[in-house]
Image (cartoon, rainbow, N blue to C red):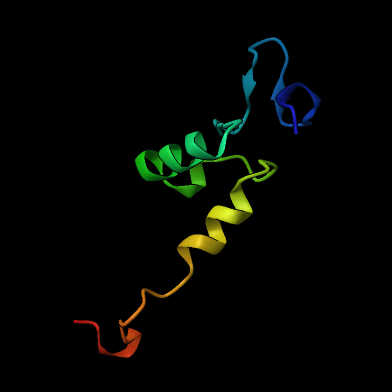
Amino acid sequence: MHCPDCPRFDPEGRACRDGKVNPHRWGEAVDVANLLGLRAICVFNDHRERLVRARGRPLPGVDPHNIR
């Protein structure tokens, strides 16, 4: 979604009312998520769900019940 089309966009301030970012490319989305966290990315962003799924996968060879 383009920010100006979003109901949360403030046209006067030309920014998101929630303070979210909307990266256009996958690499930018990964960088934003690594630096600011997933919550900084707009829920309407095209890459956000892919990032959520990628971060929710367990690491290969790691038993999630045996983490100390």
